[in-house]
Picture (cartoon, rainbow, N blue to C red):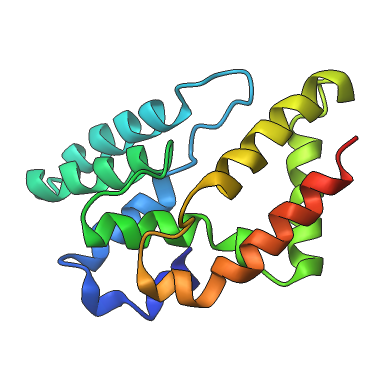
Length: 158
């Protein structure tokens, strides 16, 4: 995400907030839980308070982290952040294939008959969106290849 957002550094009101959001956005991740983003944001808030980071920027950091849960549209800065989080969807086909294998490994505790319908639902959700990426910057760069990658993976799931 850092690499993806580096080119848009000037678009953010506080680059340090972005760095903290990147560092904390998946710091708590358990495939068995649905509150990973909330718990990650809470941890970021607690730790940023300790270092006396500005309270408004702590809230911006938490907002970016929480936005990665549903990737819904927010302000431009948050949209850049969530688009960077989804940039892997538009990666080169080989990179995306490796990513999808990593996702399957993460959820390896689930047998195919449980995993596959859930994964299909996720892929179909993204494909049903009018635009996967909220910003023109990321849409122009990744939208077409993301749709191809998602469709290819969807076809491969039995």
